[in-house]
Image 1 (cartoon, rainbow, N blue to C red):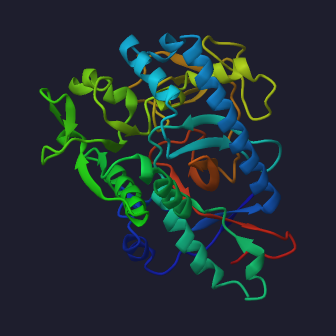
Image 2 (image 1 turned 180 degrees about the vertical axis):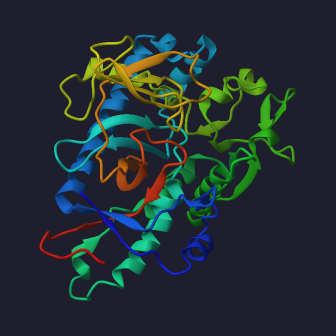
Length: 391
């Protein structure tokens, strides 16, 4: 795994906008950063793929363990929701996607930092934007060498397959929802909606605050008072259950994507559970509900986008972020530094769609904590280390 500086495409902003990415810059600085790319070797991609499948299997066993042993208090899940989660697990509710975030530099096994199991973003850029970048990049490679390069990315095709597989069981219309005040969330939700349409589904979009509740019929409804039978919501479960309509979630017949049992995996309390169950896994870092040693990362169980993280090394705080999650429960995880490419710290996000490991996306920051402003950088891999990377 190496990082290469490169020249961005002329008018790259217009190019990515034409492909659906309207949030390519933050405060006049690129969020989509194609002035560099990461190059993997084929064997490194294989390692990431194996790690993703292994962790998916461990996570499913961990969900069963949490439900069977009634460990919901560790996750802050109230009892009415606990019963509902158990029911969704027992009926094997469908899941579309998730993203494992790794610290990985090609030397040693990938180490799981967290699992974005409920509302992972950075999907459009991973599935579409970097794929078109790769196609343009290959034009700079001599034609004889092009077969030696690829990108680990079948996300788009796998998403369409996932929706197509669900169609027979999921009713006549898919409602898609996200908050109204986040351009990134809106674009991610609309991209997922587009893949569902390509799979032959009928869809309708509405914002979270447009979801209605019909008390007489005891159903959630859309703006035309139609019952919502199936909804993909890009809105965290821990927020959903605390909304005024949250008490109606367990009694409504709506099927949700991601399903309620993902509430367990999207909570960082799953990390100590995984460590307890699989302490010999090469992919896991020690994680506990109490501090241990003098070097660890403190993570609120419900924090997002790197908020309220504290890195402690040899008993001293070396990095920390602010946010809105500081008052909640926390877990403690072994500190495993991100690979450092001349003060560019990269995390590898490995995507799982409908049970298939099918792509990666990289975010990098100038500091050791990945945040919501961290840049997305494209990648490719080469099948032969003897071939020079594209300039």
